[in-house]
Image 1 (cartoon, helix red, strand yellow):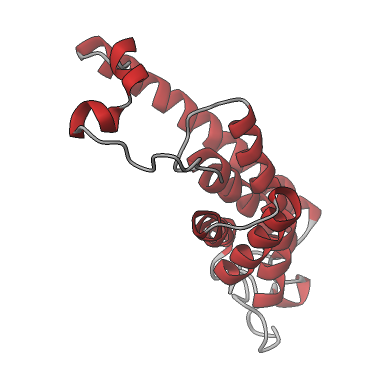
Image 2 (tube, rainbow, N blue to C red):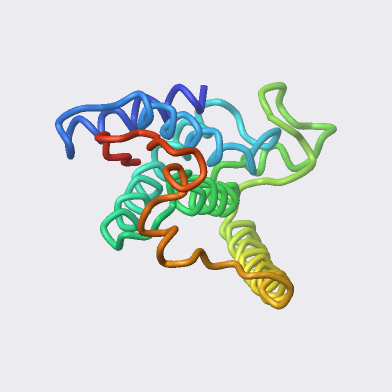
Length: 184
């Protein structure tokens, strides 16, 4: 459901901003929808999941667009889709989880997603935001340290000659996606 909503919303944004939607952008939208809803899995009902995808997807789209404008080479859209989508999904769990009626599993209504666990509140939103920030800082520091260790053992950056030529042309003697600009 979230993947379909992401695909549809991304296609609508592509039509509005670029005049067309491509297969690549449709796939990106589907993955973005799934990335947003994954941190919420098991704690939200379908209507809340759709609302979260609807709220967060334009931000993922904007992040991809910003990285494209900044000429950041990120063809898999890891930061814009997985990073931003996962972070937004984690934070939005504080607003999209079951209501307070579901706090006690013994008296919770049948429609609760996971009674007795996470319930929506401003306090939960704050906890989700704090945890998401801690995880983001940890991931940044751990990645930076690993890159420093790897860089001490081998060269991480391509030689300018190879970068200018392109990895596909250098390694395989042909260009992938020639003549087709890749966009989010």
